[in-house]
Amino acid sequence: MSAHESMEHAEHAEHASGSNKKIALLIAVLALFLAISETLGKGAQTESISKNVEAANLWAFFQAKTIRRTVVLTASEQGKLTLGTITDDAQKAIVQKQVDDWAKTAQRYRSEPETGEGTEQLAEKAKHAEHERDEATAKYHHFELASAAFQIGIVLASATIITGMLALAYVSGVLTLAGLLMTALGLWWPHLVHLH
Image 1 (spheres, rainbow, N blue to C red):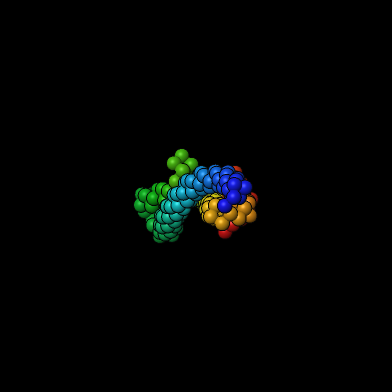
Image 2 (cartoon, rainbow, N blue to C red):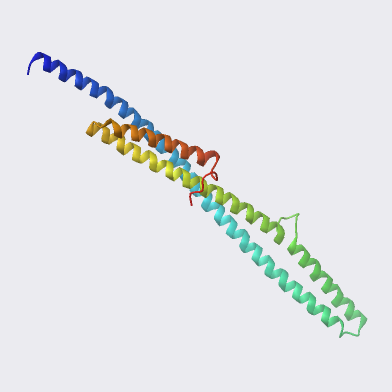
């Protein structure tokens, strides 16, 4: 090998080393973004599951209160029918008091703002939990897509080092931008793009 060829070979190796350092930096940045999107995704997934359980529990409580209210209303209606057959005033007063108590209980089961446990309040809480669940689920989908973009970007950037094909590094850069866009959508505008 001539001195000229040796110098060209050394210059080429130095240039390749510089490019590889840039690609390695790109991989490191992609790994950082991947870690962030994975962490955000796990948090959103946990929130989604938690809010789903909360909504299910609230709807179950709502159903139990509705059943109790129906039973009390039925008893009240039965008591009203019984009133017509009672001739003793003292007995009639006792039954009337029970009918009134059942009516109050049924009303309390429907709306109980002081405890938040009437069917109206429970339905409102359950709908709110469902909204929060849907929000967290939308975020999760965006973070998952971001993670996929970052992972594919890492693979392509790694392949650039092996193959020397710079086009793969550019595609990796585009995937980085796509991943950042998906992360931003997940953080601030999860319902802007519907993914499910």
